Length: 177
Length: 149
Image (cartoon, rainbow over all chains, first blue to last red; front, top):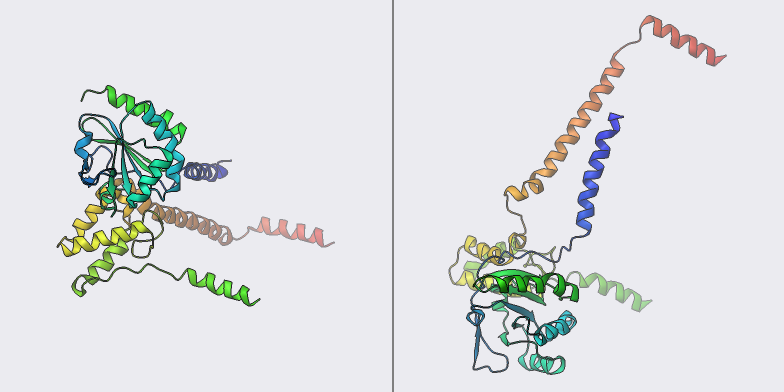
């Protein structure tokens, strides 16, 4: 009896590792920026290239920074959810228009609606590197103190918004600045 | 049939299309290429940024190049990437408590395997090396004798 005991135990240990591995998405890599101050940037504004968008605009409030592009198909999936959030004025949403032609980006916003308070144009993707962006869409939650508290990789689903992003935003909004 | 072969040949060749890293000044070349081979492309995760043709890999190669020209050391460049993309950006995971299992696990498994093998071999040796007693020998002969009848 004890002869079979060890192999069975080993089997279950291995099986449990594999089972956990089966449900993990290897394409989402946790960001080392969580808990760190938002990287500085200063970029032209999409609607007005004379104006500047920077992380200083986030000061004193909880904001979402959504990295998107007109060529990004998954961005279209999450767009209605962002629009809904903007409509209810839950949280100001800033956009980082990543490696996109501004004309295309403006047409995209005209077609699908504009949930953004302001959009920063990161044509070269240089600011994207500072923020550790490796795939669009990505959404950062920045708290009142300018600290990155959460990063969502990939399109936001209604479930993500209801169960993760919105509760976190509310919790951060209730924190003292 | 001809089209079919054309398709096969084309399919074979499409795997040989690799990224073309940008040219750098000769004095930076060896460091540039060795750094590219240390960094993982987060889009095609099983490729280094030297191999990957993804847009991000291209941008990160540009970043490495810019930093090299600005006089950054290898460890500064690696540090820059890790602080933005995490340890995952390193093609060789660093040795630290959270990665001990990853680095030493295979050796632990090997040791367990060798121990088990040694035990089995020793047991087999013990079995064959003990000769039968006279009594046992007689018993064997009687059984064999019976079956032969």
